Image (cartoon, rainbow, N blue to C red):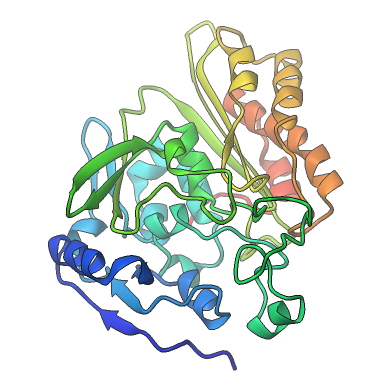
Length: 343
């Protein structure tokens, strides 16, 4: 049985107290929301914070407001999102991403903020401490070599968050709070393409909310590839969003790839190809081929990297066909292993 290391537990009652505790404890403290990623990592000694700052009593982080846009508290659970009819109606990509995370039991605990800040993953990193010690650890934790690519100067652990690609495609912004003040950044700006330093969040900052502008007729979708139809992290994901003019031409197109790098990757060049055009089969094929060039998966997760790269274009094409209005339910059952018919 793997046991947690020793740690101090702090449970502030409001956000101000939480920020004060986080600032006082310093970089060795970690925020605890649902704990579905952090606690298993602690058992494997991947993360060993001296203090856990629990956020479950901070009610203001569990609020959802729908008024000329949407504001979602970082401690809303994924089940909260799945059960929110406005999220499902206005932001389908986010709803589809949330409902495909793990299992109902884990979604009951896992939070939106936790999924956005999810630790990067790798075959060589996500092992017990004894296993990692046997290979002299890895660059991400306690070692000096990235075993995915031994000559690489940086860690190549992969981003496996589901909600981030969807929200980046929806042009979401996030609010970060500390005792020094508040700042708001585009969600895409939160991430670095580095498996070790994958977040631009300071140690004293807490991600408090996700903000979305009015949906204004935007369509969106999220596709996830994994070995099993439940529980597994994505080995490839695609989020797409667009607005459509009455004549069927697309505008404000966004395509984001997940689980192919250490951060979600926007395929802006592929999206630009579709601006002002109808989503014809040829236009979709051209954009899908362009987007797939961004997918450069490494051998650090499930399935072979060559197959994951090849299938990237197919997943982008399916996402764009769904935006166009095609009936892709059979493809979802076959590829995504999910009907997405309800929570």
